[in-house]
Length: 305
Image (cartoon, rainbow, N blue to C red; front, side, top):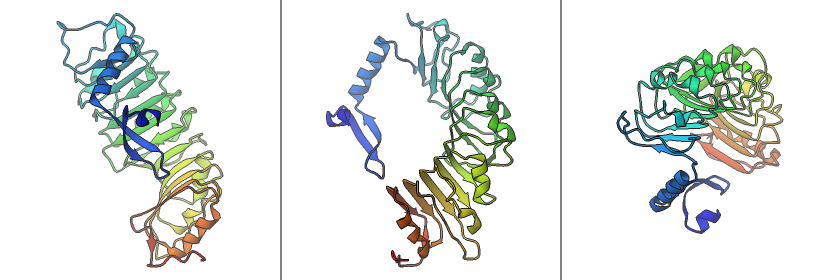
C-alpha cells in the first residue's frame, strides 16, 4: 500500500474484502527494477535467442533465472546455483530440453513451467529433491507418478488438457505438500493411502459423503469442492476450514448444507433453496460471501428462515 500511495505501483484489482489482489508496474519503474536486480545479482533475465557465439556469462552466481526465450543457456556454469526458474514462453520440446539439466540443479527450490504447456512430464525431475514450488501444465491427462517422489514439495499447481485428473494413491507420500491447486481441472481423489496435511486444495470432486474428504484432508483450510448429492454437503466437521467454494448440483430437487463456524469466506453456486441461507447467521466469522451461477432457487430470501 505504501508503494501504491507513492504511485510506484498501480492498483489493478481488489479482493472482496477490499484488500489488494494484484498490482501493475509502470514501464519506467520496471526498467529500474530490472537494472537494480542485475546490479544486486537478484535475478538474470533471458529474453533473446542464445547461440554459442553470443552466450554471456554473468560475473556472479545466478540464483534466480527469468526466461522469455525458447533457447535459454542452462548449461552455463553460472547457473549451477539456481534456486528459482520461471519460464514465460511456450516451448513444446521443453520436457526434453530442460530434463538433461536437472542433475545440475541441485539447489533448485522454485520451478514454474505452466506457461510452457509441455507434452509430457519431464523425466529425471525427481532429481530435484529440494524443490518446494512446482507449477506445470501438461497435455497428458494422467497424473505423473514421479511427482510423488518430490518429497520436499510444498506447493503444486497442476494443470492438464483433460477435464479431470485422478490423484494417485501414493500422493500422500508427499508429506510436506500443503497446497494443491488447479485453475480449471478437477481433481478426483480416488483412493489415497493415508491422510495428508494439505491446507489448500482446489476443484476436488466429492463422490462420497463429506466425512471421506475429511478423512484424507483433516487440516484443510481452503477448499474448492464439486458435489452432486445433498448428503455430501455436511461440512460442519471441518473445524479448520476458513475458505470454501462449493459447486452443488441438486438431485431431484433436494439439497441441504451445513457449514463450520470457522468460515471466513464462502462462495456458493448452483441451485440451493433460499431457506438454506439461514445458515449464514450461524457463521460468526464470515467476512466474504459470494453467490454465483444461480446459487439459489426462488425469488425471495427470508433472512428469518
